[in-house]
Image 1 (cartoon, helix red, strand yellow):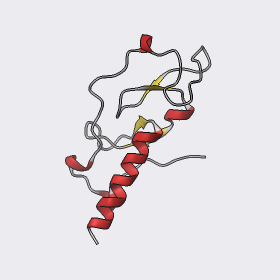
Image 2 (tube, rainbow, N blue to C red; image 1 turned 90 degrees about the horizontal axis):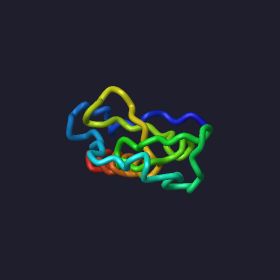
Image 3 (cartoon, rainbow, N blue to C red; image 1 turned 90 degrees about the vertical axis):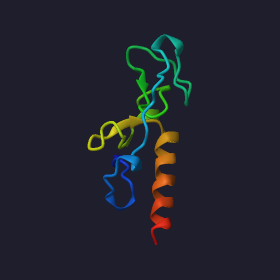
Image 4 (cartoon, rainbow, N blue to C red; image 1 turned 180 degrees about the horizontal axis):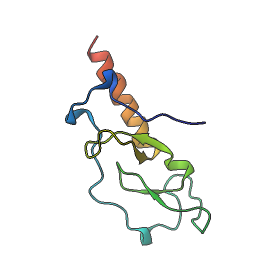
Length: 98
């Protein structure tokens, strides 16, 4: 299933409404398995960093997209937990504006 990039409620373009990016990425050498599903990485199952938390995931566990403060118009790869936090934050902002 194709998932669309998560945008702040109301389509806000304010810098403060975007997800912050990870400043400390987990080093590639530090993980041999996906941080979520624990699948081992190999030539077929490659490592991908979540741009929000910086941890390393497989493609399946990091296929979500969110807009970040660094690149507000280009969706960035994220893990489900960061995507879900973005969704919860967007819903709360939407509810607060009613």
